[in-house]
Image (cartoon, rainbow over all chains, first blue to last red; front, side, top):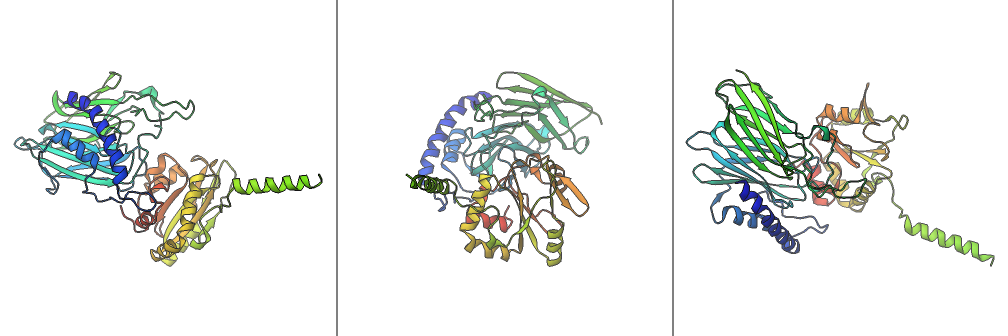
Length: 279
Length: 179
């Protein structure tokens, strides 16, 4: 899957750029130049391109409620738009969310993340923060283990998320990967957890205000989370995830074990985070 | 020859007039803003919201608190937008029961130098934002707008800056608390 995303990334970016050029000419605009297409469920040329590349002509259900997306219309900062994904079905071995795709239609890299999930998640709810470069849609597409596709989308009014210089205040801690269990441990039940990687997640579009040079891209490519050596989820990500990438997720502890995250970035640096979980 | 200095001075005056457009600083008077000037020294610039909060509570109204800077181009743009659309927007501000408050700062007043006073409590920008649960605590960006009820409880999480509501329909979304 990772190869698929990497290989597809350049092609998708090129398609998106072309689609954006066409859309700019056709898009209905208000007199002040702001887009008027603010229907949360609307499509866009970029989405049509991405959809064709990722899902071909497969049916995508947009009204099932099996996946929901919570995003503010206007986030405080475009570089850290909080996103909450809620699944409408439990993560049971018989039927579960196998994969989630997070798409930001108008970002330079529109496919922000692909999450590969197992039933060990217990409940496929996720929270993260995204960079959003301009007004447009954020989408999440859930692929169930029976092959069904379900989508939720939200139109957001933020911009500049890919060009805002990061804080870069913790470069000495780069790669430090930390787990938290904000609500404690619930044995044999979905237990909320957070994993965060200290990393600037530089997009390559940020200008260093002092040197007036672009900061080279350097971002986390993958986060693989396991518990007691059993895969929980793997996230294939890029710079559309905010600085210090983080995911809030669930896992089901069956006994004492270790939460473990294997992280790799675009310079092929590898980092590990661990947390011992006791009943 | 004697006329030369006055001609030069007239030309210079004309050039200056062209170079510096006459932009008033702050929220346009049409919005009847309550202007609050800071107190304290440059290292501790404090705005006191006590009186406007008391008034909002007494009159059961909301507060549209604008923090602008005298040397901030984006502030001038937003103020100019308000000026140009005052005919449409002023009735909307009053219709949605807002008292407009204009805090007049400067770009040199960074987040560590800005303090907000309410009653006996004076908090730094970051502490004030954290206390009200505003995600903009991480960075002060001018201009900044807060929407409060009479108890200074935020009505909605606002974005940094004003760029995402500088059209009449979008300003109305803000006044109507569309999230």
